[in-house]
Image (cartoon, rainbow, N blue to C red; front, side, top):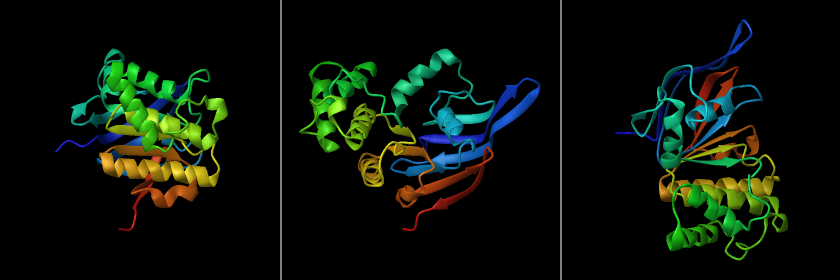
Length: 230
């Protein structure tokens, strides 16, 4: 059986002058479809570095990373964009929306970058914005939307491309508690319904109960893993 993400002895070491800094100590993980996993830890704990490696943005220094059974940690930089295009979508703390484009146009542009065009892309865009509760605001500009609504546009953009893996870096960081929780509950619902693998790097303890598994990091190492109660 191939899992969305598998790692074995995955490490990341930075060279700072003559000093080696281990940002991620050997990490063994198996992440499943339909699962929402939280990466928790203070600033500098290694959670964002690990998320970036899982997203094929950073190359590991050692160990292996498999995406649906494909060993990708040894691929050269030129082959990684194709892996990201096929398997991975991202959600960022800062929304990363184009201010001059409407919600519809922002999501549609994301689909075009994934290679989907024409009527199918437009229909997919509209359907996804309805799915995240923005059917009546799909033609609004980001400046005319609340922070929670802008983050829902970012969620719609990530989900619309049908990428089986969604990686989110502090997606609730710019939101109040109520809106942040709504976004995370939406991600959990859609992950379960659409069998996506969702990994969220965060330090927001208020949403910890939403995760199926919580991975705690400290000084670059996984200190413990907690599963949610059934």
